[in-house]
Amino acid sequence: MNQEYKSLLEKELKLYPYRKTGVRRVNGIDIDMPMIYEDVSSIMFFLLADASKAAKYINNNRVKPILIFKNTTLMAINIFNYRKSAVGAFNEFTFSIPVTVDSNFNIPILPLIFDQSFRKFGFYVVQLGASNDLGRKHIIDLWGYPTYKNNLDITLSYDEGRVFSSIKEGDEIIIEASEGFSKIADYKFEKKKFNTYFTSNNKLHHVELDTLLCSKIFFGKRDFRIEFGDHELSDLLVNFDVGKKMFSGFYPNAVEIAGEAKLI
Image (cartoon, rainbow, N blue to C red):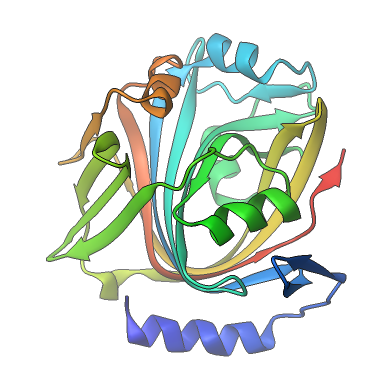
């Protein structure tokens, strides 16, 4: 979305200390692991949610939702546009909850969002979905994240200082959202680690993501707009009592490097 940032990230990727751990095959395509998504953009919305309902859904004593107020956690809604990867272009969404794993201490939310160098902090993936068959299949085959059964129409666009995003299945709206952001030229280049967790076959897994990104974070409601439709994925969010937006982030250009899923 921004050629200057794209060129910067291409240079940074060449400097990244990449070490191949293996090769996985999906639909006849050999994929080096960790897998590199070379050209990505994303919007992230962090909405208040009921912590007790989140804990009940996770149903694992090792995993605890981060509390920001009494019985209040966050639900992160991420919409991704993957423009270049080993499986081609596709779009994706995730619903996830910030958590600690095997920790007796709650921590402030901002350190968790901005620095996940320690595996005890990260995001528990509630649901993930993709826009085409190969996008869905490689997610399931390489990692095993909980992935929605059908292809979805997932969109992300930036126009005149506003980011628009949506998730639909056919004519059914799941989510439509938009928010005003400052000029992309004001964004900051960063290197970040993100930890994701999920349950598969009743076992807890961890995936580490290294990210090179140009991004900006915004706090408060501002002119944020979101609409939930009448769909089972919309209902999933409603069941967590999602509400007011706390903050959001947008990166017009990024590189993501996804490691293997590991049992923990």
